[in-house]
Length: 89
Image 1: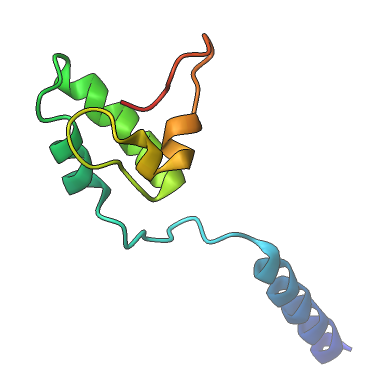
Image 2 (image 1 turned 180 degrees about the vertical axis):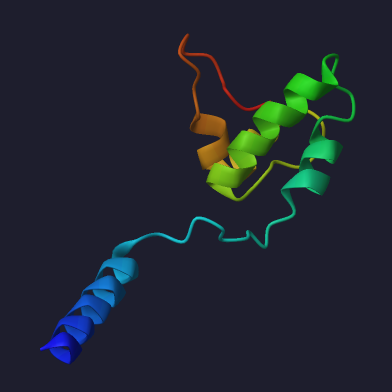
C-alpha cells in the first residue's frame, strides 16, 4: 500500500512539474550589449537601459543604432506604456 501511494505521489509530481514554465530560462539574445549600444547617447542612461532591457527580454530583439529603426523589431516598436507612448527607447 505504501509503495503504491509513493508511486502515485511521484507520478503526480512529475505530471504537475511538466506543466510549469521554466523560471530560470536563459536567453541566448545579448540584451545587455544591445541595450548599451542602443542607449549610448541617451540623456538618462539608467532609465534607457532599464526599459530597453525589459523590452529586449520580452521581444528578443533591439533595433540597431541609438535612435529610430524600430521597424526592424515590430514587438519592440509596438510596446506602449500606460499613457500610450512608446515604452521602448
